[in-house]
Image (cartoon, rainbow, N blue to C red; front, side, top):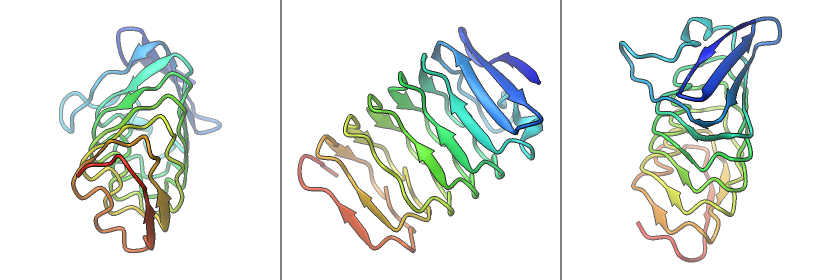
Length: 173
């Protein structure tokens, strides 16, 4: 098991035996960039197969899990209210995402090119789907809850398997 910090009060633990990356502690996760300030679990990207966000984490940082190509599942904790941008960008094997009720904003490019992601349940607490949130994903159909007031541009662009997007009111483009 390896571990460290990923925010002022957020921590991470990676179990090299099970492949589970757990984000614990509380509050906001740190934001990361492509060069220099990369996520501390990045050296283990080939071993990480699932991610569990703890129940006291409120924010998933920018690019936190970008390019973790072997991740197949993610579970949000109860307190996550928003995500940064490019959070799961390019996680090409990600197929199972369990978001929490209480999530209000899904950041730009959050699930960009998550080609194995065919199904997702957007919680009724979500009010904002930012630009290109699901661009290039494998979604086949999606229901956008009535609570969504803002849909960014190209939210479902290049989703070649997407046949149905259903939303009834409230959303503005």
